[in-house]
Image (cartoon, rainbow, N blue to C red; front, side):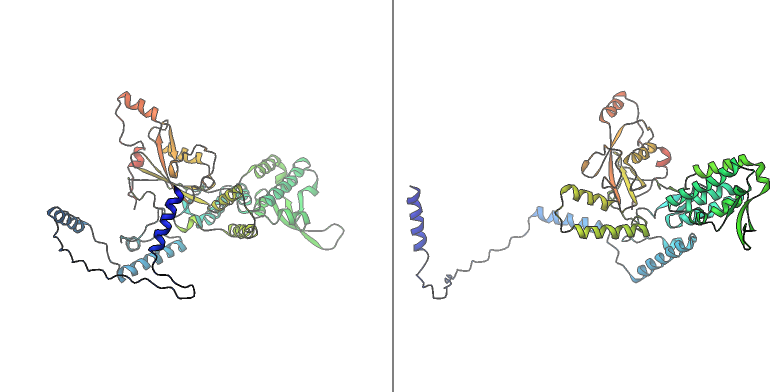
Length: 438
Protein backbone atom coordinates (compact mmCIF):
# COMPACT_ATOMS: atom_id res chain seq x y z
CA UNK A 1 0.00 0.00 0.00
CA UNK A 2 2.82 2.44 0.86
CA UNK A 3 4.48 1.68 -2.50
CA UNK A 4 1.19 2.43 -4.29
CA UNK A 5 0.92 5.92 -2.75
CA UNK A 6 4.58 6.66 -3.49
CA UNK A 7 4.01 5.84 -7.20
CA UNK A 8 0.98 8.13 -7.33
CA UNK A 9 2.97 11.01 -5.76
CA UNK A 10 5.85 10.53 -8.19
CA UNK A 11 3.48 10.50 -11.22
CA UNK A 12 1.75 13.68 -10.02
CA UNK A 13 5.08 15.43 -9.49
CA UNK A 14 6.22 14.42 -13.02
CA UNK A 15 3.09 15.83 -14.68
CA UNK A 16 3.30 19.17 -12.88
CA UNK A 17 7.01 19.63 -13.65
CA UNK A 18 6.31 21.28 -17.05
CA UNK A 19 7.72 20.50 -20.51
CA UNK A 20 10.85 18.41 -20.86
CA UNK A 21 14.37 19.82 -21.27
CA UNK A 22 17.68 18.51 -22.57
CA UNK A 23 20.58 18.39 -20.16
CA UNK A 24 22.74 20.45 -22.57
CA UNK A 25 20.21 23.29 -22.67
CA UNK A 26 20.25 26.15 -20.17
CA UNK A 27 17.65 25.87 -17.49
CA UNK A 28 14.41 27.70 -18.13
CA UNK A 29 12.78 29.78 -15.46
CA UNK A 30 9.05 29.24 -15.47
CA UNK A 31 7.12 32.35 -16.29
CA UNK A 32 4.96 33.70 -13.58
CA UNK A 33 1.38 34.38 -14.40
CA UNK A 34 0.42 37.99 -13.96
CA UNK A 35 -1.58 38.47 -10.83
CA UNK A 36 -4.46 40.76 -10.61
CA UNK A 37 -3.70 43.70 -8.35
CA UNK A 38 -5.77 43.61 -5.24
CA UNK A 39 -7.80 46.71 -4.65
CA UNK A 40 -6.44 48.66 -1.66
CA UNK A 41 -8.65 48.36 1.36
CA UNK A 42 -9.82 51.60 2.84
CA UNK A 43 -7.83 52.41 6.05
CA UNK A 44 -9.98 52.52 9.12
CA UNK A 45 -9.50 55.26 11.70
CA UNK A 46 -8.23 54.40 15.19
CA UNK A 47 -10.77 53.28 17.71
CA UNK A 48 -11.68 55.37 20.76
CA UNK A 49 -9.68 53.03 23.04
CA UNK A 50 -6.56 53.35 20.84
CA UNK A 51 -6.81 57.12 20.83
CA UNK A 52 -7.08 57.21 24.64
CA UNK A 53 -4.04 54.91 25.01
CA UNK A 54 -1.98 57.06 22.65
CA UNK A 55 -2.87 60.22 24.55
CA UNK A 56 -1.85 58.60 27.84
CA UNK A 57 1.48 57.49 26.36
CA UNK A 58 2.22 60.99 25.10
CA UNK A 59 1.44 62.40 28.52
CA UNK A 60 3.87 60.00 30.18
CA UNK A 61 6.61 60.92 27.71
CA UNK A 62 6.16 64.61 28.42
CA UNK A 63 6.47 64.00 32.16
CA UNK A 64 9.85 62.23 31.79
CA UNK A 65 12.93 64.48 32.29
CA UNK A 66 14.79 65.13 29.07
CA UNK A 67 18.45 64.16 28.89
CA UNK A 68 20.93 67.03 28.91
CA UNK A 69 22.88 67.63 25.75
CA UNK A 70 26.61 67.85 26.35
CA UNK A 71 28.10 71.27 25.69
CA UNK A 72 31.65 72.47 25.23
CA UNK A 73 31.44 74.27 28.58
CA UNK A 74 30.69 70.97 30.36
CA UNK A 75 33.57 69.29 28.52
CA UNK A 76 35.95 72.01 29.71
CA UNK A 77 34.64 71.62 33.25
CA UNK A 78 35.32 67.86 33.12
CA UNK A 79 38.88 68.46 31.92
CA UNK A 80 39.52 71.01 34.69
CA UNK A 81 38.17 68.50 37.21
CA UNK A 82 40.57 65.81 35.95
CA UNK A 83 43.56 68.16 36.12
CA UNK A 84 42.67 69.30 39.63
CA UNK A 85 42.38 65.70 40.82
CA UNK A 86 45.70 64.80 39.17
CA UNK A 87 47.48 67.78 40.74
CA UNK A 88 46.00 67.01 44.15
CA UNK A 89 47.10 63.38 43.92
CA UNK A 90 50.60 64.38 42.78
CA UNK A 91 51.11 66.96 45.50
CA UNK A 92 49.34 65.01 48.22
CA UNK A 93 47.36 68.12 49.14
CA UNK A 94 43.64 68.48 49.41
CA UNK A 95 41.56 70.66 47.13
CA UNK A 96 40.39 74.06 48.21
CA UNK A 97 36.71 74.80 48.63
CA UNK A 98 36.55 76.54 45.23
CA UNK A 99 38.42 73.71 43.53
CA UNK A 100 36.07 71.14 45.07
CA UNK A 101 33.11 72.96 43.55
CA UNK A 102 34.71 72.74 40.13
CA UNK A 103 35.94 69.20 40.64
CA UNK A 104 32.62 67.78 41.80
CA UNK A 105 30.77 66.12 38.90
CA UNK A 106 27.31 67.61 38.50
CA UNK A 107 26.30 66.36 35.08
CA UNK A 108 24.00 63.38 34.86
CA UNK A 109 26.12 61.58 32.30
CA UNK A 110 29.26 61.36 34.47
CA UNK A 111 29.81 57.96 36.07
CA UNK A 112 31.17 58.56 39.57
CA UNK A 113 33.52 55.84 40.84
CA UNK A 114 32.04 53.42 43.37
CA UNK A 115 35.00 54.19 45.65
CA UNK A 116 37.62 56.92 45.26
CA UNK A 117 40.58 54.54 45.59
CA UNK A 118 42.33 52.03 47.83
CA UNK A 119 43.33 53.45 51.23
CA UNK A 120 45.37 52.22 54.19
CA UNK A 121 45.54 53.05 57.90
CA UNK A 122 49.02 53.70 59.29
CA UNK A 123 49.46 51.68 62.53
CA UNK A 124 51.88 54.28 63.93
CA UNK A 125 49.97 57.51 63.28
CA UNK A 126 46.42 56.29 62.62
CA UNK A 127 46.33 58.40 59.45
CA UNK A 128 44.40 57.18 56.41
CA UNK A 129 46.57 57.41 53.29
CA UNK A 130 46.08 56.43 49.69
CA UNK A 131 47.76 53.35 48.28
CA UNK A 132 50.45 55.25 46.34
CA UNK A 133 51.37 57.29 49.45
CA UNK A 134 51.52 54.33 51.84
CA UNK A 135 55.28 53.56 51.69
CA UNK A 136 56.27 57.22 51.92
CA UNK A 137 54.03 57.81 54.94
CA UNK A 138 55.32 54.70 56.73
CA UNK A 139 58.93 55.74 56.20
CA UNK A 140 58.25 59.25 57.51
CA UNK A 141 56.38 57.84 60.52
CA UNK A 142 59.26 55.48 61.41
CA UNK A 143 61.83 58.26 60.91
CA UNK A 144 59.93 60.49 63.32
CA UNK A 145 59.92 57.63 65.88
CA UNK A 146 63.73 57.76 66.15
CA UNK A 147 63.39 60.65 68.58
CA UNK A 148 61.23 58.47 70.85
CA UNK A 149 62.95 55.05 70.66
CA UNK A 150 65.88 54.81 68.21
CA UNK A 151 66.38 51.06 68.78
CA UNK A 152 62.76 50.20 68.03
CA UNK A 153 62.71 52.59 65.04
CA UNK A 154 65.83 51.05 63.49
CA UNK A 155 64.46 47.52 63.99
CA UNK A 156 61.22 48.59 62.27
CA UNK A 157 63.25 49.93 59.33
CA UNK A 158 65.18 46.65 58.99
CA UNK A 159 62.06 44.47 58.92
CA UNK A 160 59.81 46.81 56.93
CA UNK A 161 61.85 48.29 54.08
CA UNK A 162 64.01 45.31 53.09
CA UNK A 163 61.77 43.33 50.75
CA UNK A 164 63.97 40.23 50.49
CA UNK A 165 62.78 38.35 53.58
CA UNK A 166 65.48 35.68 53.24
CA UNK A 167 68.22 38.32 53.33
CA UNK A 168 66.59 39.92 56.36
CA UNK A 169 66.45 36.58 58.18
CA UNK A 170 70.12 35.83 57.39
CA UNK A 171 71.30 39.30 58.39
CA UNK A 172 69.30 39.37 61.61
CA UNK A 173 70.58 35.93 62.66
CA UNK A 174 74.18 36.97 61.96
CA UNK A 175 73.70 40.16 63.95
CA UNK A 176 72.25 38.14 66.82
CA UNK A 177 75.42 36.00 66.88
CA UNK A 178 77.56 39.13 67.21
CA UNK A 179 75.52 40.27 70.21
CA UNK A 180 75.51 36.79 71.74
CA UNK A 181 79.33 36.69 71.62
CA UNK A 182 79.53 40.04 73.40
CA UNK A 183 76.98 38.97 76.03
CA UNK A 184 78.68 35.60 76.69
CA UNK A 185 82.30 36.86 76.48
CA UNK A 186 82.31 40.53 77.55
CA UNK A 187 86.00 40.30 78.54
CA UNK A 188 87.04 39.38 74.97
CA UNK A 189 87.90 42.57 73.09
CA UNK A 190 87.78 40.86 69.68
CA UNK A 191 84.02 40.30 70.01
CA UNK A 192 83.42 44.00 70.67
CA UNK A 193 84.92 45.00 67.30
CA UNK A 194 83.39 44.35 63.88
CA UNK A 195 85.39 45.11 60.73
CA UNK A 196 83.18 46.97 58.25
CA UNK A 197 85.01 45.50 55.23
CA UNK A 198 84.62 41.95 56.50
CA UNK A 199 83.16 39.78 53.73
CA UNK A 200 80.43 38.25 55.91
CA UNK A 201 79.48 41.67 57.28
CA UNK A 202 79.29 43.16 53.77
CA UNK A 203 77.24 40.33 52.26
CA UNK A 204 74.83 39.67 55.11
CA UNK A 205 74.50 42.81 57.22
CA UNK A 206 75.77 46.02 55.64
CA UNK A 207 73.37 45.66 52.68
CA UNK A 208 70.28 45.92 54.91
CA UNK A 209 68.42 49.21 55.12
CA UNK A 210 68.37 50.47 58.72
CA UNK A 211 71.17 48.25 60.01
CA UNK A 212 73.69 51.08 60.57
CA UNK A 213 71.11 53.07 62.53
CA UNK A 214 70.62 49.96 64.68
CA UNK A 215 74.37 49.69 65.44
CA UNK A 216 74.48 53.33 66.51
CA UNK A 217 71.30 53.00 68.59
CA UNK A 218 72.57 50.04 70.65
CA UNK A 219 75.91 51.65 71.54
CA UNK A 220 78.37 51.03 68.68
CA UNK A 221 80.52 53.78 67.24
CA UNK A 222 82.70 53.96 64.12
CA UNK A 223 86.46 53.99 64.66
CA UNK A 224 89.47 53.77 62.37
CA UNK A 225 91.94 51.29 63.85
CA UNK A 226 95.24 49.76 62.68
CA UNK A 227 95.06 46.25 61.35
CA UNK A 228 97.16 43.85 63.46
CA UNK A 229 100.39 42.93 61.63
CA UNK A 230 99.82 45.53 58.89
CA UNK A 231 100.62 49.20 58.39
CA UNK A 232 97.23 50.21 56.95
CA UNK A 233 94.07 50.98 58.91
CA UNK A 234 90.46 49.75 58.69
CA UNK A 235 87.11 51.05 59.85
CA UNK A 236 85.39 49.14 62.65
CA UNK A 237 82.21 49.21 64.63
CA UNK A 238 83.36 49.28 68.26
CA UNK A 239 81.08 48.86 71.27
CA UNK A 240 81.33 51.74 73.74
CA UNK A 241 82.86 50.93 77.12
CA UNK A 242 79.76 52.01 79.07
CA UNK A 243 77.69 49.35 77.30
CA UNK A 244 79.64 46.63 79.14
CA UNK A 245 77.59 47.56 82.20
CA UNK A 246 74.36 47.19 80.20
CA UNK A 247 74.77 43.67 78.86
CA UNK A 248 71.15 42.81 79.71
CA UNK A 249 70.06 45.66 77.47
CA UNK A 250 72.06 44.16 74.62
CA UNK A 251 70.32 40.85 75.21
CA UNK A 252 66.92 42.58 75.06
CA UNK A 253 67.88 44.37 71.82
CA UNK A 254 68.83 41.04 70.29
CA UNK A 255 65.46 39.52 71.26
CA UNK A 256 63.62 42.51 69.80
CA UNK A 257 65.58 42.20 66.57
CA UNK A 258 64.76 38.49 66.23
CA UNK A 259 61.09 38.68 67.19
CA UNK A 260 60.01 41.84 65.36
CA UNK A 261 57.77 41.80 62.29
CA UNK A 262 57.38 44.26 59.40
CA UNK A 263 55.17 47.28 60.02
CA UNK A 264 52.19 46.85 57.72
CA UNK A 265 49.55 49.44 57.03
CA UNK A 266 46.05 48.05 57.48
CA UNK A 267 43.66 48.09 54.53
CA UNK A 268 40.91 50.62 55.14
CA UNK A 269 37.56 48.91 54.49
CA UNK A 270 35.95 52.26 53.61
CA UNK A 271 32.68 50.98 55.02
CA UNK A 272 29.66 52.60 53.35
CA UNK A 273 25.92 52.08 53.65
CA UNK A 274 23.67 52.95 50.73
CA UNK A 275 19.94 53.34 50.40
CA UNK A 276 18.06 50.76 48.30
CA UNK A 277 19.02 51.33 44.67
CA UNK A 278 18.61 49.61 41.30
CA UNK A 279 22.26 50.55 40.62
CA UNK A 280 23.57 48.11 43.23
CA UNK A 281 25.11 45.80 40.62
CA UNK A 282 26.81 48.65 38.74
CA UNK A 283 30.47 49.18 39.64
CA UNK A 284 32.86 51.91 38.52
CA UNK A 285 36.27 51.03 39.95
CA UNK A 286 39.31 53.35 40.06
CA UNK A 287 42.73 52.40 38.71
CA UNK A 288 43.92 51.33 42.17
CA UNK A 289 42.01 48.08 41.73
CA UNK A 290 43.82 47.24 38.49
CA UNK A 291 47.33 48.72 38.76
CA UNK A 292 50.12 46.16 38.81
CA UNK A 293 53.47 46.52 40.55
CA UNK A 294 56.75 45.72 38.80
CA UNK A 295 56.78 42.26 40.38
CA UNK A 296 53.19 41.63 39.26
CA UNK A 297 54.02 42.72 35.69
CA UNK A 298 56.93 40.25 35.58
CA UNK A 299 54.65 37.54 36.89
CA UNK A 300 52.04 38.33 34.21
CA UNK A 301 54.68 38.13 31.48
CA UNK A 302 55.86 34.77 32.77
CA UNK A 303 52.29 33.46 32.91
CA UNK A 304 51.58 34.65 29.37
CA UNK A 305 54.72 32.90 28.11
CA UNK A 306 53.54 29.71 29.75
CA UNK A 307 50.08 30.18 28.22
CA UNK A 308 51.58 30.42 24.72
CA UNK A 309 53.51 27.21 25.29
CA UNK A 310 50.39 25.43 26.48
CA UNK A 311 48.15 26.77 23.71
CA UNK A 312 48.88 23.78 21.47
CA UNK A 313 48.29 21.29 24.26
CA UNK A 314 45.03 19.49 24.86
CA UNK A 315 43.93 20.84 28.24
CA UNK A 316 41.68 19.02 30.64
CA UNK A 317 38.86 20.68 32.54
CA UNK A 318 40.95 20.73 35.70
CA UNK A 319 43.75 22.53 33.85
CA UNK A 320 41.32 25.14 32.47
CA UNK A 321 39.86 25.77 35.92
CA UNK A 322 43.34 26.17 37.36
CA UNK A 323 44.21 28.75 34.70
CA UNK A 324 40.97 30.62 35.35
CA UNK A 325 41.81 30.82 39.05
CA UNK A 326 45.29 32.04 38.18
CA UNK A 327 43.71 34.80 36.07
CA UNK A 328 41.64 35.86 39.08
CA UNK A 329 44.77 36.20 41.20
CA UNK A 330 46.04 39.21 39.27
CA UNK A 331 43.61 41.40 41.21
CA UNK A 332 44.93 42.62 44.54
CA UNK A 333 41.68 44.13 45.82
CA UNK A 334 37.95 43.63 45.46
CA UNK A 335 34.94 45.82 46.22
CA UNK A 336 32.10 43.84 47.81
CA UNK A 337 28.49 44.94 48.28
CA UNK A 338 26.01 43.05 50.42
CA UNK A 339 22.32 43.75 49.84
CA UNK A 340 20.05 43.23 52.84
CA UNK A 341 16.44 42.00 52.62
CA UNK A 342 15.19 45.57 53.25
CA UNK A 343 17.24 46.83 50.28
CA UNK A 344 20.02 48.59 52.19
CA UNK A 345 23.50 47.97 50.79
CA UNK A 346 26.70 47.49 52.83
CA UNK A 347 29.97 48.10 50.97
CA UNK A 348 33.61 47.39 51.85
CA UNK A 349 37.06 46.98 50.28
CA UNK A 350 38.99 43.72 50.77
CA UNK A 351 42.16 42.03 49.64
CA UNK A 352 41.39 39.61 46.83
CA UNK A 353 43.29 36.89 48.71
CA UNK A 354 41.33 37.34 51.96
CA UNK A 355 38.95 34.56 52.94
CA UNK A 356 35.16 34.83 52.82
CA UNK A 357 35.13 34.48 56.63
CA UNK A 358 36.49 38.05 56.82
CA UNK A 359 33.41 39.23 54.93
CA UNK A 360 31.10 37.38 57.32
CA UNK A 361 32.79 39.12 60.25
CA UNK A 362 32.57 42.46 58.46
CA UNK A 363 28.81 42.05 58.00
CA UNK A 364 28.32 40.74 61.53
CA UNK A 365 30.04 43.80 63.01
CA UNK A 366 27.64 46.06 61.12
CA UNK A 367 24.51 44.38 62.54
CA UNK A 368 22.43 45.77 65.37
CA UNK A 369 22.12 42.20 66.69
CA UNK A 370 25.31 40.39 65.76
CA UNK A 371 23.99 37.03 66.95
CA UNK A 372 21.43 36.74 64.14
CA UNK A 373 22.41 33.84 61.82
CA UNK A 374 22.57 34.62 58.11
CA UNK A 375 23.89 33.36 54.79
CA UNK A 376 25.52 35.19 51.92
CA UNK A 377 24.43 34.35 48.40
CA UNK A 378 26.65 35.00 45.41
CA UNK A 379 25.63 35.66 41.81
CA UNK A 380 22.96 33.22 40.72
CA UNK A 381 21.91 32.51 44.31
CA UNK A 382 24.97 30.33 45.03
CA UNK A 383 25.54 30.01 48.80
CA UNK A 384 29.00 30.91 50.06
CA UNK A 385 29.26 28.02 52.47
CA UNK A 386 33.05 27.49 52.48
CA UNK A 387 34.30 30.50 54.41
CA UNK A 388 37.93 29.41 54.03
CA UNK A 389 37.95 30.12 50.29
CA UNK A 390 39.47 33.41 49.14
CA UNK A 391 37.52 35.98 47.14
CA UNK A 392 39.58 35.33 44.01
CA UNK A 393 38.97 31.59 44.35
CA UNK A 394 35.21 32.25 44.41
CA UNK A 395 35.37 34.57 41.39
CA UNK A 396 34.35 37.58 43.51
CA UNK A 397 36.96 39.93 42.00
CA UNK A 398 37.41 42.78 41.24
CA UNK A 399 33.85 43.47 42.48
CA UNK A 400 30.70 41.57 43.39
CA UNK A 401 27.16 42.08 44.66
CA UNK A 402 26.02 39.53 47.24
CA UNK A 403 22.66 39.00 48.90
CA UNK A 404 22.11 38.44 52.61
CA UNK A 405 19.47 35.90 53.66
CA UNK A 406 18.37 35.45 57.27
CA UNK A 407 17.85 32.06 58.87
CA UNK A 408 14.16 31.38 58.18
CA UNK A 409 13.51 29.43 61.40
CA UNK A 410 15.05 32.12 63.61
CA UNK A 411 13.14 34.89 61.87
CA UNK A 412 9.90 32.93 62.28
CA UNK A 413 10.56 32.62 66.03
CA UNK A 414 11.23 36.36 66.28
CA UNK A 415 8.00 37.22 64.49
CA UNK A 416 6.04 34.75 66.63
CA UNK A 417 7.33 36.46 69.79
CA UNK A 418 5.38 39.57 68.85
CA UNK A 419 8.21 41.93 69.83
CA UNK A 420 8.51 45.12 67.83
CA UNK A 421 11.47 44.90 65.45
CA UNK A 422 13.62 47.84 64.27
CA UNK A 423 13.14 49.13 60.73
CA UNK A 424 16.63 48.00 59.74
CA UNK A 425 19.01 45.37 61.09
CA UNK A 426 22.03 47.68 60.63
CA UNK A 427 23.49 49.67 63.50
CA UNK A 428 21.94 53.14 64.01
CA UNK A 429 25.33 54.87 63.72
CA UNK A 430 25.74 53.38 60.23
CA UNK A 431 22.24 54.37 59.16
CA UNK A 432 22.89 57.94 60.36
CA UNK A 433 25.43 58.38 57.56
CA UNK A 434 23.61 56.44 54.84
CA UNK A 435 24.39 57.56 51.29
CA UNK A 436 22.64 57.47 47.95
CA UNK A 437 24.25 55.20 45.36
CA UNK A 438 24.83 57.15 42.17
